[in-house]
Image (cartoon, rainbow, N blue to C red; front, side):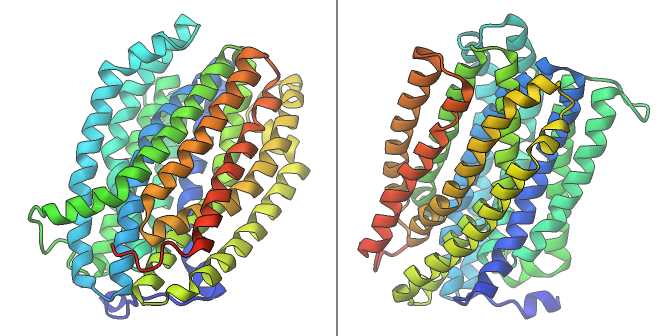
Length: 451
């Protein structure tokens, strides 16, 4: 209970405060990506086909995952604003309404996966066996969605009330569970059945449930829930629901469209064969695990910008965003150097041939530079979310996606160029997101916007 009593809701504008918020977020993002990479390493040793199809199924699930992330991002901006205003009594009410919304989202995702996804896969992929494997896998994997969504709401709650240090506890529990059940269920160890490719789906669902239960136990025993009236008012509040949806829906659409375009990218690569698809799946692993620092600073940007606006410190927003950008760049450049020095080491973990590794190395070089661009872009993009104008982000995203889709179609499908050229699309995408976001923050048009 001492934790709750000493809890400070308002943030300071300093590098120390930024790191205190961002680094635990980075750890909490890193751990699920370790889960995902663990899945792919095990599947890589199972077969090249399993590793390739994991790219398709992983991006599909990510589409629904980012819908929850979009909802939690809008929720985080609102709760952070209330934290900056020192209105702790409203934070718990907002959280409960967001959980209700997330359950509706999860049910929708499950229904789409069972009744619409098979049709989409059948008309997108060329290999019949790939279609059957992907469909069967997704019908198991999608049941983790309710746990994932509530888990994401919990993340936003802890970040918005300046308690991001507790994020890592749930993710450690999730990681341990995922690694154990991956190994046990894919290959059939410890008396459990050998489920092969589908074993990774069951392991991920179990892991998401484990992480959710663990972190809610922490919130309860630390007294955090009681301090913000987390479960005091469970009644349906349509005003809060409207506010959350107003802030979140543009971000949900933005993120979903973004990842859907990535699925389009992977479908085009599938047309080139199993090896290019498997290589691209590994690249997504690299993007996920090394991009966690960029996303942690972007989440800090969202929360801290909204918090200091709530403190009536609008004139210091640009100063804050520049500080966050410098720190994000420091981490991303360091990561890019590591990727380029130890490229062969990272790729060898997937148990593929020397020719496979040689084909993947140039793509990894492209990815390393994309990570640097991403780190700057997402900080400014999420600063716009923190100001309360999430619709602006949707417009920005729409422009970037049009450019992205035109590029990947021409490069991969029309001209049939190598995937190394195709992955340069990430450079175009992140630059297209950064320019309008930077301009909007510099324009001061966000000043005095209320949420």
